Length: 211
Image (cartoon, rainbow, N blue to C red; front, top):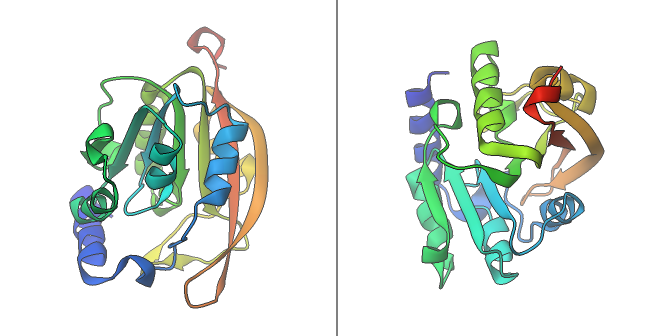
């Protein structure tokens, strides 16, 4: 799917459905918070939530005093939904962009992606994502990436997805990233169905040591 088509799709989703009417909705982002803390989250660390949409992770991070926080998403409507919940939305940097075509202007300590990467089903898009990840994450920084597991569903929001375990995701990310942790997760949708995910955490190795 071309970047313009992706943007149109997600803008349509977030302008036609309420926040809790999408399968990925979760009232409390407990797993994401736990994984970020395991990856070294502290209030002074810089964090980017890629494909954050209307997720409530930004609420939890700002409430805990996170001082350097960016949320990136294709959909301006999704980000407006998130902004509308926050009394201090101006503390957050909001970026409307396709991550595969985005040029970072700074580096982050932590990269979080809950279910955005698996929508990139072509090698070209996957490679573009990895290039941006490598630019945006500092050496020693951690990336927490959640995707559908190999036995997870094959489509979401009407779109095909790529499914991964930790090893296949490592293969896509390449030698500049080292797997440090992984776990399976079952997400229950607002209407009670179960979706099988995997979440893996990677560390960016120093460029000189990349294999």
